[in-house]
Length: 409
Image 1 (cartoon, helix red, strand yellow):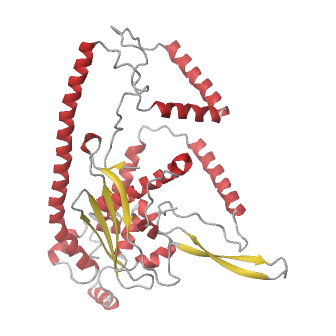
Image 2 (cartoon, rainbow, N blue to C red; image 1 turned 180 degrees about the horizontal axis):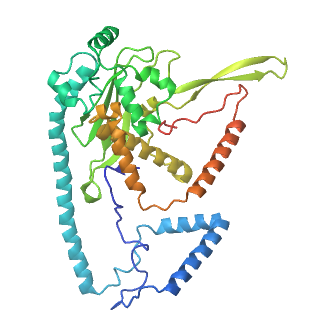
Image 3 (cartoon, one colour; image 1 turned 120 degrees about the horizontal axis):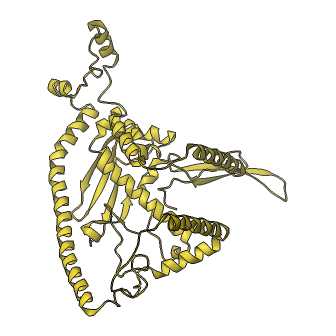
């Protein structure tokens, strides 16, 4: 499956029954706005239909399958138009083709503009990395310009003796410890992926940067100091786009590839060891069998999901799951590229959270939520989760854990 970079609309090759009349083209239209009575009847019809579908899930599947088979097929409406009207439709298609060419040129120029300014951003990112890792200190002018109005970062008002004591206490601290780990934990989508075990490794993360590819796409680079978990100095993940642009000139995401992490023995954070007891039926002796199973970890990010194969096509649930994980994986890459890297200091201090919260509030405006019903659903969900966990406990008494969404199955 390919996901567009931005707001791609479906690129259908022919009209569908959902958006074109099933009957021949009328000479004129005398449509009327629905009155109160017709609206009430419509609501009743919808309620009746919903009740029927709720009691007949197979009917829903049959209808969905039928509608799916109609996608891309002509309803016959365009063909039924008079020749002079079809001629005008063909002319409009030609106009649209010219528009599409301009859209394609626009997106290519936007990409070149992004690359141009990225080259200007790069020296700033290099200066940031030097300060974070203790290789350079900010100038007095930079400190003064970056200090907030209350002087909290500078701790103004403290006594000279106190300042001297603090300086002596942190004399051996280089740069800003755990800068990237803290920034990532403040970024919501990334924080959900980071486990307690991951933090011990991510404390050694010294820089996160990116680069554009020669063809449409980009590469994320995570640089680490020497650590006890893996030998890689840099772990990369590359996002590739399709060669042909999509509807509206948008670049279309194709797939991602991640580096293989060279884990030290028994240090792989993407797996855990399950211990189970086995009893020999003949000797009645028991033994402990250890099994390695996938587990949640941020480092699953470097093992991206792959597009569904032909074998998976018949399993709709499997395809849907893979597509969801592909979408999540792409969104994570975009968040790192567009949010984390450009404004890492704002995520470290937490200032970026205010903008994220404002955005979320705007998204919720106009939505109709019933708090009481949501609370009831949450309670039911929690009870159900508890039952599942207790049912899935293995013989060692440890509940089974599902692999992270972005881990390839």
